[in-house]
Image (cartoon, rainbow, N blue to C red; front, side):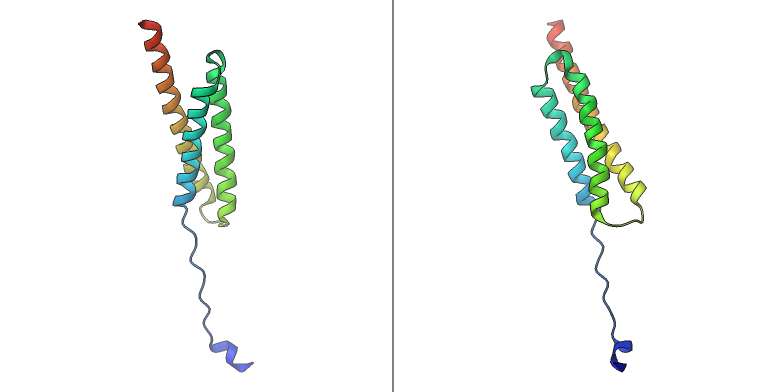
Length: 104
């Protein structure tokens, strides 16, 4: 029993937040591509909004799963805003595609 005071405990290395960030951004890209390819043309941009909301939810869940309280708000905001930017860029690309189809 007296030996326990001299033992050192190694803390587990905290998991990196980068894979979580990349996973949420990839989810945003896949969701936006699925909306752009499979949603009806008249409802496409409404579905982009649904995909963006799903990205915010996915960012929240992914960062809760990470299990660290420090930096939670910053990690969640970075993941959500990055995914929203990805959805926005893909939505804009589909918009330009529709615009060019109308012009020609």
